[in-house]
Amino acid sequence: MIQTRTDELSTSFLRRALQCVILQSHRQRWAGLLADALPTPCFLTGKNVLITGASKGVGEQAAAIVAEQAQCKRLVIASRTRPSNNARLAAKATFIPLDLDSKASIRAFVDALAAPPLDVLILNAAVVGLNAYQTNVLGNAALVQALIDAGKLSSTARIVCVTGDIYITEKNCTPDFTGNVARCYARSKLGLNWYAMALQEKYPALEVCLVHPGVIYTDLVPTSSVVVKYARQAVEVDARTGAWSVVIVASVPSSEFKKGGYAHNVMGWCTFAKDDPVNFAERRRVFCEDLAMRAKL
Ligand SMILES: NC(=O)c1ccc[n+]([C@@H]2O[C@H](COP(=O)([O-])OP(=O)(O)OC[C@H]3O[C@@H](n4cnc5c(N)ncnc54)[C@H](OP(=O)(O)O)[C@@H]3O)[C@@H](O)[C@H]2O)c1
Image (cartoon, rainbow, N blue to C red):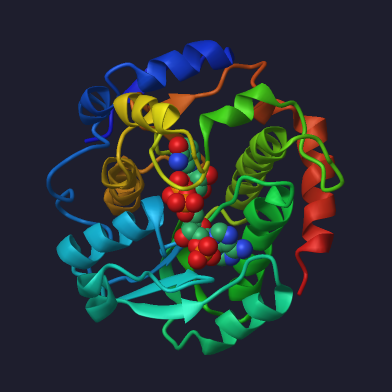
């Protein structure tokens, strides 16, 4: 069972970062977002599931857990490149290429997706880079809109958006921002949070939530220094541990799922403080109006 916090999420990035890295995997287990087996009953049983960004890192491990442990009807994995080192995953999942930076690719992906409609969508793919808005926000919004328009998303689908606590360092998300890569990434995660909440409000029958999977040792932020690699491995969790947060949120029965909620790897379901940037209503409105126009294929 995922823990639910009654107090609000801190708006201090330092506090959230410390909460995350100290004994991360131990606290993740306490929060109910790290387990050895999927919850029973499992929401994924008999369902059509899509995981984006499944070629490596968290997405690949999430797909492996789902392939090994969930009795899905169909598991589709999507990214620009095929997962190369996971033979079991290849046997149980269908790979369809998808580049979230390209509307033509999104269209081709949706065309290639056979019936029946998807029941579970895990929006995991992301980049840290100057094009973070394009991939992490616009790409996801265009994909969801294209699936809805093509009748390829169930009206009661569950959509798990993989976000990151780093959004708390930013106050806005705009497509034209050209700061450094870290800020572009953080702003894109704030944008994704706004998008997810607006999507839940627009389609109340959907089950939409955000999940922060932890601070994880993956290629998202490449490291060349050996010292930094060791330091990261000491404090960050591995991709499999991070993937559990995502898969558990996708698997809990609807009675345990918080629509529009934020599942935090070491704190469970959380509520936002009033002054959290997620609650900047006017900026969110302007952002969502603009995104809706841009996301049309
Ligand atoms: N690592 C962390 O500490 C951390 C912390 C908080 C949140 N997260 C979130 O966790 C999720 C997974 O991150 P990760 O650490 O596993 O990163 P990763 O190892 O770099 O994997 C990113 C995945 O996204 C895919 N991707 C990138 N650009 C794409 C595009 N244009 N179209 C389609 N797929 C694309 C990549 O596949 P291709 O390159 O083959 O396309 C890859 O499979 C992300 O949403 C990230 O923001 C990570």
